[in-house]
Image 1 (cartoon, rainbow, N blue to C red):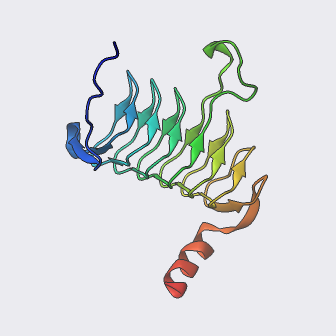
Image 2 (image 1 turned 90 degrees about the vertical axis):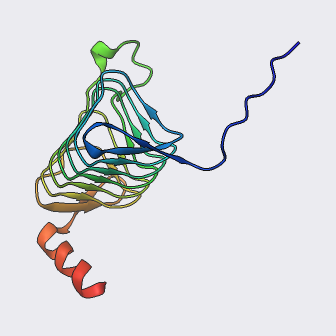
Length: 164
């Protein structure tokens, strides 16, 4: 005989983490992951093992953060964005992984992908739906597949204010 199905709530539940951070159930946070203060992790997100997330980060629902990724402070990761660690999956072991580093103040738009081993620079932006296959320098906005330079972060910020 099969076991009775356990009824799970259909609404997300707010889970309070250390340092004033929160996660919205259901989500996965792997072992040995460190989460800074005042962070928010959206429902249906997967944060792998051994990930370091700085303070004041916002990880929107459905994002995927691979094992051993490094996320700086004040980072925004949009819904369904993916940060990968295996350039040629399945590699057969973590000794072949190349974790991603996302530096302070960076923005990764919804549905964007960061390929294994890429560094996203301080205050840079990877546009929604873009795929970063190479490092993105600090203070730049990149978009497209593969991602390429679009504008400076300064110009991006001025457009956000004038178009908002």
